[in-house]
Image 1 (cartoon, rainbow, N blue to C red):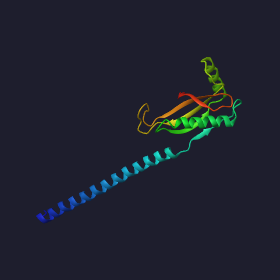
Image 2 (tube, helix red, strand yellow):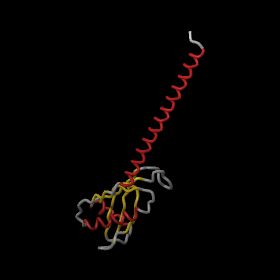
Image 3 (tube, rainbow, N blue to C red):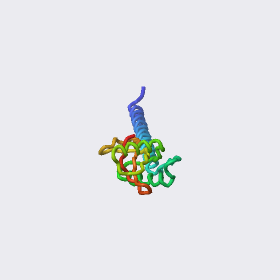
Image 4 (cartoon, rainbow, N blue to C red):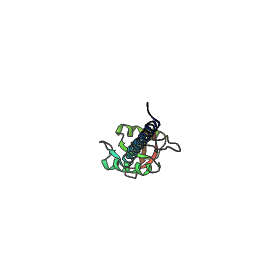
Amino acid sequence: MMDRNEAENVIKNTIEYANREIKKSKIRYRLIIAAIAFVILGFILFMALKPVSDNISDSDIFTEEDINKAVECVKVDFASLQGCKLFSLSYNGDTHSLREKEYQLKQGSEYDEYIVIDSVFLSPIFGGGAWNACRIYSWSWILGRYVDGEWVVIDRGVC
């Protein structure tokens, strides 16, 4: 049988051991939370700094310069979508552009040429306004111009 001093020492050592283990657990949890926060921050920075990829395909009706000017016009217009991160822009192809021209002419449009540029972008991380938080969108941008004129965004939206 243990005497009172021995029992007190056992209890004291047990309490000290438990306190050390609790401190270790708190440190582990803080490290895990810090690691998760670091990964999330790294992902956000990667997405924010990732350059826009331009996929300019061959066209029988537009030169590469024409398509690049349309892409630049879309980039300027895209800047108005505050908080969104643009990932890619691509020429939708001659078929879509010719179909759009036919449609626009039936609607009484004033331009001579039409081009369709597709985009993929991320909505603001926390959403807001019309945006769902952190969602990937695919939009088409319809641009028109007079022959050899400047491209003008006519419409944009979900494709």
